Amino acid sequence: MTDACAVAIGAVSGLGLGEAAYACAEVGEPARTALAHDEALASHGLLRPRCARAPSDLGVTPSADRATDLLRAALARVCDRLDAVMPRWRERRIGVCIGTSSGGMIAAERFFAARARGEAVSREEALRATYFGPFVDALGDIAPHKRCQVLAACASSTIAIGLALRWLDRQACDLVLAGGYDGVSLFVAAGFEALRATSASMPQPFRQGRDGMLLGEGAAVIALTREEDGIAPLFRVSGFGASADAVHITAPDRTGAGLIRAVRAALDDAGCERISLVSAHATATPFNDAAEAKALGELFDPVPVVHPFKAQIGHTLGAAGVLELLAATHALERGVAPAAYGDAPLDPEASVPLLERAEPRSLETTLKLSAAFGGVTAALVAQRHASNRRPSEVRPVSLRAWARIGDEPIDRAALAEALGMPRDKIARIDDLGQLALAAAAALARDVGRDALHGAGVVAGYALATLDTNELFNRRLLDKGPRWVDPRLFPATTPNAGAGQIAIALGLTGPNFAVCSGLASGLEALTVAAELVAAGDAERILVVAADDAGPAARHWVEIAAPGRAQARGAVAALIEAGDSGPRIDPDMAVDHAHGPIGHLALIDALDALRSGGLP
Image (cartoon, one colour):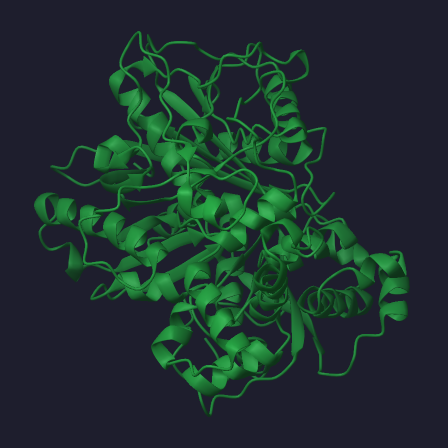
């Protein structure tokens, strides 16, 4: 059997800890919601201060960062369960693949405030303020054989589970801990409110009058293995697909084309034709729900019953995909089709089957859909029983070409001309995004745009959008949440650069960023090679960029003194076959030593070209 078998789960959401975090309503009951007025957000002056907070007592010793505690709580529960069903699991080759949207943003707010006041910041405080801070802290004594943290905004944990499936397919790991986490921060809440993406009342997915989502805290981790004698799987993940809209950074492709591509890839991977239950992305925003409903109508006739779980636990961002998948698989296990929260009439332009009360039904398979800033789309197929799935044969992956951008100022006029974009649109992109675009444009010039057809984009960052985030946070500190810049907020999402490249070059393959440490440019190369080897894309553009602004330079002085850092970017084209130096998806990634960010990737590419890496 080649499904990824779930053998242990740890979860927390606004509904509770453990199974309570994702449990569906009892038969005959309506959907319940954890969303409520939040005094902490209200005290900061938000106009729409509602969210779903997880329990204050998470069963772990509290740290200085709420996001870390959420992830620790989920990991502690999954580890306890593994100790019971697989006592020697720590001796195996463990993979850890976790998704997040905002990482250590709560700690970053304190880092930015201290810098604004001219106060000293300790190394520990600086480390917590990164996107990888909670990931590293929460792992504790778990020593992973492979690790990755996915930064794909609201699709992060969906893609993380998909990568876990690929690791198991290739037998690169024996056991993978996969999932996602995010806390509710003022920074993120203010940004979504500025974009007018939050509801003035309560989310009403797919219904008339819907006006947005509300945030929620959450984390969940699933232990996935290949078939294990003596261990009955809780459910099985049998399919994964990812794509990109390549249309807009924040708005969906209204045709639903990106979602359709992702779903078809996941169904093909699973060898599955019938779906019993759809776990929808369902942000309750006007255009997103309509695009999702259109995609489902194109894919299925009739459309299966739909479960919009965000209306119950809030939008948990990096944890959304995994918590929503768990709710759906819990429904499969119990044979209960879950109810959908909301009481307004269905919108004829976004009509999908919703249940007012939970019903007993025979359910075998579920489809999880995710979409995110940057035009990211992703899908998973999960089921109760074993599938007949057979993964694709692992293909060789090679480096075709790469291009580098140094620390010279970006020539926006030349970049706009090279990409066929208006100059003012280039000017509105943040510095980090412009660097990534410039590197991609240089590579496209060298190899020709036709060579990039259908490619994906995987970006790797060391400190990601730290400087952009400080700019956004400065106005938040100075003027309050009602006056933050809605144009800058999307750029604070680390996968925005990958999305800008996909839009500029029309690239519709898998599209996201990664960052589990300071050598994440090289991490991106290994992840991209994994996807190409598995057949998720024929070719992928790997991009690493560092703006090395004031916040990033200060951070390195505090937390990584002596390690080389520079402003610049690199883009590399990798593809299936033997057109150049072979790339090993299992090549070592050393986050603790060596140059930072794109410089680490440049060293690796130089070594590949000279035959210095396996």
